[in-house]
Amino acid sequence: MSRILQIVSCARHQGRFVLAVFAFSVLWTSLSGCGYHCAERIKSLPPWIKTVYVAPWANRSNELLLGVWITEELRHEFLRGRGLKLVTKDEADVILEGEIVSADTSGLSYIRYDQAVERRITAECSVHLVRSEGGKVIWQTGNIVREESFLVGKDVIQTDSLKVMHTEALKNEALQKLSRDVAEIIYHRITGVF
Image 1: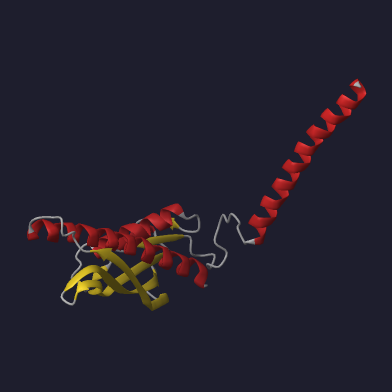
Image 2 (image 1 turned 90 degrees about the vertical axis):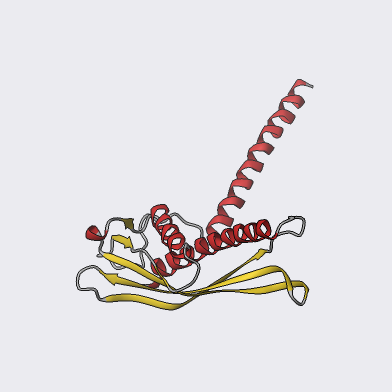
């Protein structure tokens, strides 16, 4: 009887081991199958590009902080990434310059023909990557368009001025999300374009 208990106990431990090995192999296969990998240096960039400076963005829109937010988000993308080192303008191999061409707000959904409950902000940007020495444009694009929706201030707010302030706060949140999205798109286009 004790011999049978030993065999059952051993089989139970082997079963856990087999299950753990199976789970690990499934995890490994799924991660390697989806293209997940850790890259130390982005291989698509020319070897001479090691440092970047993100210049403050020009802004032709009425959204005054949008250029500042996109610049900061781009800097955060390069700080988080491992491909290029973010440095000062004097130390940079390349300079990333951008411009907000337009930012427009439009109604998205209405409760009446003249009262929107949700709005959409659409921003169009152009970007170019310039070599520090000589100012030659290495890469550029003018087709970055992002949009983000936001709610209009609630009717439960009693005064119109508070409703406007609430709507502006929601709009600023949407603009900050839009800034993060634009920065991520630009970062991935630059690091994967060459």
